[in-house]
Image 1 (cartoon, rainbow, N blue to C red):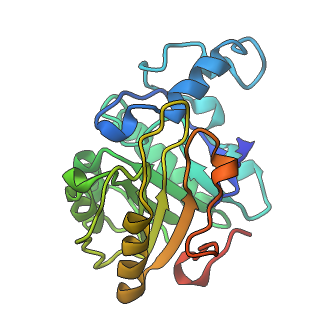
Image 2: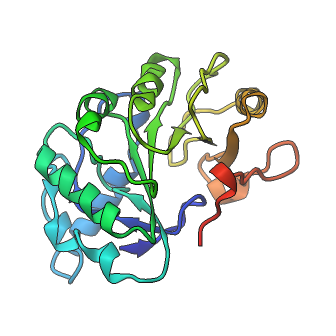
Image 3: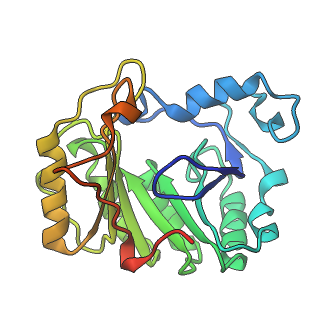
Length: 244
């Protein structure tokens, strides 16, 4: 586990490693870049799991029970370096991850996937405790079907990560959605984000009564670009919750 610089969570927990690209939002994958950096630290305790190629998707049972050892209530982003619903992960292992999250009821777990098809099918076989938030990434209007798949799950809190936002999303169906995160792409060659896209999504969330969180403008220097929209920050969380 590691302290996270991600604005909407506290720590990351990676019980699996590795991933493969499935859509245009994956083009400049942050996890892939970080994985390559961490490969050089493969002999250091805690970094052994990164010794394989990023495209090799593996369970990492050594870290499976880490949340159970931490007694301070914490908000975790699950699998910042992978995708829990990746097709190469056995369903039995996904069940094990959900079992840990169920037992660690004092924590909040935020799970995010692009693999909505598997989420829709295998999600029906999982037990969904209230402390597990489920989200899908939607980077453009080509992937709105992921939101429909999310709605089929038993997650009490359902959220969208519209990052990197690659185009306008003027007709979002936010029925059953509790939280929307928006962010621009960062890195050496980021694709552009437009303020009118972001503000339109903000207005849709306001009209639907959905919490809105603007993460970043991104760009080649995301710190300099900041995260102000309309001269202010938007840090709304679902059901008036905040990280502990």
